[in-house]
Length: 463
Image (cartoon, rainbow, N blue to C red; front, side, top):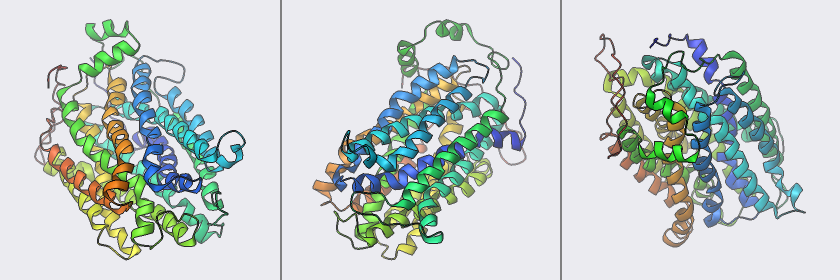
């Protein structure tokens, strides 16, 4: 079997640039979806139920996209057709989501907005999943940590732009940040328009600038792989899930606690900051104070994404010194402390310090689990297993979506700040869980020694 050639920095950059656009749209969704849904009439304790749409679509779509992208080869290649289709659908959803009241004659704006949230997340998932597989497809083992780190850096840049855009348009350019009750402010609407344009432009850049290797050029299929390629569809997806590598199962525990925490942060940060720090009432969504809180949360989300972008560039060097598992464990612990600190902070500006810790955790979450996982996946199954790995991201979000609202209402007295405290505790649990993961591939060597790729472990059906 031929060895994959090393790629230059700019080749890796070009193949990952599309993720900047994906994360621009994802950041707009994360920072503004709760505000948009509350504007259309959602109560704070119901927000997590609407947000279930996002992980539920991801759970269904990513394994299917991964499975079929492993078996696709067109003039555009294997992964790029899915980039393009997902991007066009996501851009359309970005344009319509803040304008849901335009369709009020069909359904109440709240339900239109929730439906568009589902469509947006489904489309982002169609575009996103093949990007993870593309890094593993094209890069040799020793460049994977670098590849996922560059991808994480671009994710951070896109997220900063998306998170800050409403604040920039309102405070720097002067576009209105308030609107009549039941309508989304113009600064948010125009931010979504800009996000749609950026999304399409940078994904097209990746499609044009990246060459994919034809099937079999560097990964010779085994007899088992050839046999499995003759059996496509849902049955094979379930068989692959049952036979997932041991490392993937162990990382699933880490991912569960990590993404349970992240989901609470995305859903409840705006109402938590508005009530706990800005002093608004839980059901106040039209006041200037609430809009200021919403805009500031966008800035804060941009800060943690900016930190993650810078931290991602440091990850390869840190992992070389202390190992990938310890790097991820320390990063998650710092993020947990950052979330816990939001409870004791009274000055909105000091929340930036909390975001630094969260950004360190986020940068690691986006890179290190995939760098650890890639070495345990057999050749020819990168797409399906990267898609199935998303199960450990979406399941905790769905569980949180079902239980998070009632927990906030009945246990926390509708005080969303306690959801963030719970998230901090869960990140600390995730940090401890990393220690028990078996990182079989690309074991980190002492400085000055050459890294040796370890053969991927065989698929296991037991725990």
